[in-house]
Length: 392
Ligand SMILES: Cc1cc2nc3c(=O)[nH]c(=O)nc-3n(C[C@H](O)[C@H](O)[C@H](O)COP(=O)(O)O)c2cc1C
Image (cartoon, rainbow, N blue to C red; front, side, top):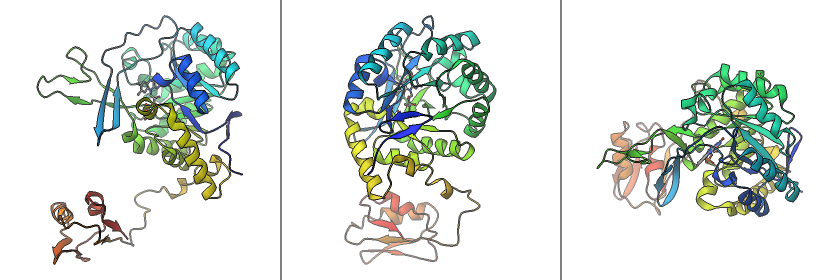
């Protein structure tokens, strides 16, 4: 029997799909709906002390589309605008109504021990299952020493983790930033400081674009802009890399985040070490309803592979990640062109020629490979407009 249930640090997740801290987890009514629709849990939009002033910009989102689909999303948004009391009431209400759903409190405070510890103490017995420390928000908050300003310093990350661990009665996940030189160093520092687990990643610092008529950056806030946080399907390769590097350096449980839009992405995150995945942008652009296909897809896949639960997938690909030096470079692959699909446009010939190798020619209506010149780089297979080229 295949189950989607997973247990992480004693917390039972009925399935490994949870919402990440963001607008879809900012309102109690919405969380109620998400849980009803089948999400296994949610990381609540980052909670701060009530006097932590935040004024939002308008507009605060921008997107990059490919074929009409939002592939990349940028935000310059800050944190939750609910008061602590509103959260306490909401968490209690949701726990009573949805006792099997996991609620993780994402928190952030000024870099003052009492402020962090007070926030933890007030939430400890609220009904939450765990904490997530937001050391990674790249928008606005780092300007005042918080968010990514903490997560880019191993010392600051360790110091605040220690403060939190002194008083936390629930497991504590530290949410890491991808905007660092070495995510391994930050992982090791917070693990040493006592963190129970890692959440990775938060958004990738970005600048979405420039309006070439007005020279105003995007998103345009009364003619000006600032660097934002990039998310959505285009950051999945960065998230996967970060999660794999966390796993290569630590055995802590991992909540994998970044560009998860379907069950396959989730499975890939598990293969590099994630116990559970979090989803944000895909829900913002397509709604909570995507959970049905995610659960069914993962369940069918696990069954087809003979796995009994998502835990069987954990770390499956880690041993296959090596250094460049250790890759077996003796064997080479070559392009094979499917004549039935090829439209003889010659794009592969031109681009192979312009990008170093000149290994392809169009002769008598066929793409011909010069095996002496071909290095098996695979460029032709990626640029073929008809997907007629496979590397074998
Ligand atoms: C509009 C928006 C607001 C966000 N707010 C928060 C936040 O308050 N706290 C936090 O830890 N992460 C926040 N995030 C980051 C997400 O939780 C997540 O780490 C990131 O978007 C990558 O996941 P995705 O590619 O599935 O969106 C926010 C993301 C977006 C797009």
